[in-house]
Length: 80
Image (cartoon, rainbow, N blue to C red):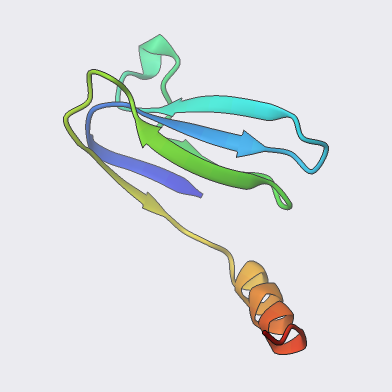
């Protein structure tokens, strides 16, 4: 879950397992379709970048423990 706290808007990009891309704007202007919080669905890749007029964005991202356990399992099974 992404949380917007302060600053200017930030664009969150998510890509589904089928390769479909969606952009969500995190920001404080909810009347302009910006989100204060957003949950990325399970199995989606995500990233973020500041919008062009944004000097800074203060955001947080909470990752559920199941994902962390899956990553640890993958690291254990994968040797480089």
